[in-house]
Image (cartoon, rainbow, N blue to C red):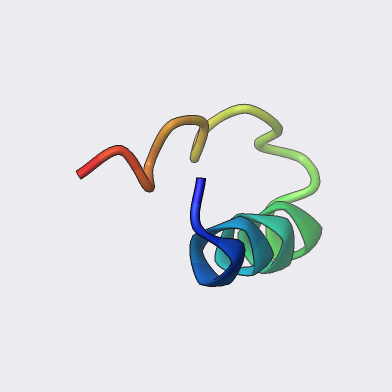
Length: 29
């Protein structure tokens, strides 16, 4: 997992705290 991708996922998780797990594996492109 890339560090940038990891940070991006963390940011998305923070914004979408309610929709937890929605962006799971989104960096797998």
